Image (tube, rainbow, N blue to C red):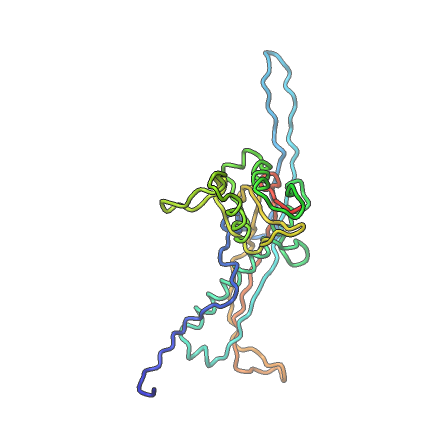
Amino acid sequence: GYAVPFLLDPTVINTAVDNGSVANMRRLARVETGVSDKWNGVSSDGVTATYAAEFDEVTESTPTLDQPSITAKKAHALIKHSVEIAGDWAGAGSTFRNMLDRAKANLEEEKFTTGSGTGNEPKGLITALAGSASETATATNDVFAIADVYSLYDALADRFQDRATWMANGSIYSLVRQFDTAGGAGLWERIGGGLPSTLIDQPVAKNPFMAGAVADAADIMVFGEFAEGFLIYDRVGMNVELIPLMMGATNNLPDGTRGLYAWWRNGSDVVNLTALHLLTVA
């Protein structure tokens, strides 16, 4: 074996359960950036117009204004490595940066979905919709049936339906595909011509951080216009800074290691409850 050249491919194969790589929450949501620690918007319940006869006095319909706000929360990660590997591995920097990017996407997808909205976490989609007027329960306790899909569709206001997207765990979509075995329900468009499948004529998006099984009180599916209803506020992009020399724990002296420290700030919340609807197992 000594005569056979040794080949090492330095590409790091990511074996983690990397659910965030889909990043559908960021892709579908409205994303705003700013230089303040908080995003402030303006919302309104709208104005009502009427037809009237000649000389009829108009009815006042001054809108009620509200101010939703989203606070940016900090997230961070650190990769510690030796000065030797930094010198011997030419692609270490770019490889570590790619790993940090992936970690950021994974964390964001999770917290934009189920974040508590308290402490240091953004408020996630499910957290904001659960218990609100935009939540619909399945017709039967602990059962998810074909009628529930249509109930969720019908619960969304008509003005949002044409631009709406379904979101659920891939396992829930597998259940939906099994509802109709005769090809007559028309739930799914058949895949063909290079086009992706749609559910009741609207596109679908997977979210691995949503419930993947039908269980009591599980939040299993969201339908709505995400760009209208869910907002992500980015305070800054991800900053990656090199710590030239890190200190050891024993004497607080350099130990021959460096640190690659990444940090970013953002927040999220539902800003329009009428644009999104959640299906929960009764």
